Image 1: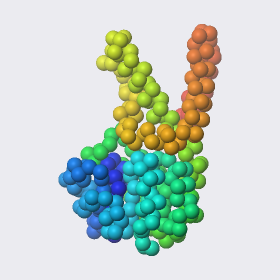
Image 2: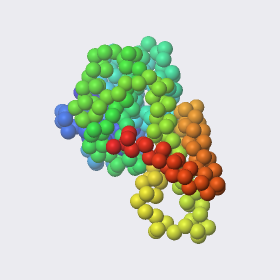
Image 3: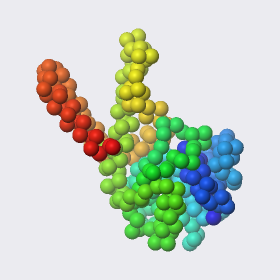
Length: 281
C-alpha cells in the first residue's frame, strides 16, 4: 500500500507514524510546497518517498491524504479527483467540511472521496511536531459516509480503528456547527485573550511571570498556525459567527452582573457554567 500525504506536518506526519507502527511494509510519500519540509519529514521517518507536486503523487499512491489548509483542499480537490483511477481513495483531514464537500458534490468520483476529521492536535505545527500516539483514544469524524464506496470506507475505518481511534459519523453541515462551538470558538477566545494580554503587557501593566497554569492552558491555542486557522474561520464563517454571538451574550451577561455587584447572580452564573464538568470527565 502506498500512501501519499499532501502536507506532512503535525496531522499528516502523526498519521504516517501511527500507520508505520502497524504496517511497516506500507510506503509513505509526501508532497509539500517547501523542499525543506520534505527534507525534515524524511529525516524524521515520516516519509520515504517525496514528490514535487500532487500530480506525481497521485500517479504513485493508493490513498491520497490531504492535510493542508482547508482553502487549499477546496481548490485542489476537484482536479485531484479528475486524475484518480478506480482503485484510489482520497481522504481530507480538514477541520471544516461543508465547503469542501459542496465543492465536489456532483463530481463523478465523489464516491472515492472520504471527508474525515481527526479530532486531535496540539498547538504546534510542522514535521517536528508529529508523534505516533497523537490519535490514540481520539475520535475520527467521517462525514456523509453514505456517499463513499463501501469497500473503500471499510478499509479506511479498519486502519483508523487499529491505530486506536473511535469513529463518529456526521453530516458535513452538522460537523461544522458542532466544531464551531467546541473547537473553532476556543481558538477565537484564545487568540482574543492573547491580544488583550499583549496590549496590556506593552503598557507595562501585566507581569506575565505571574501567569499561572490557568492562563497558560487558556491561551495555549493562540500558538496555533495562523495559516491553518484563518482559512478555517472564513470557511466556517456562518457557524462561527453564530457561536461567537452566543458566547458574546453570556460574556455580556457576566459583565452586567459584575457592574451590578450582584454576588448571588455571579455565583449562579458560575454554577451554571460549571455544569460542563458533567460532560468533560
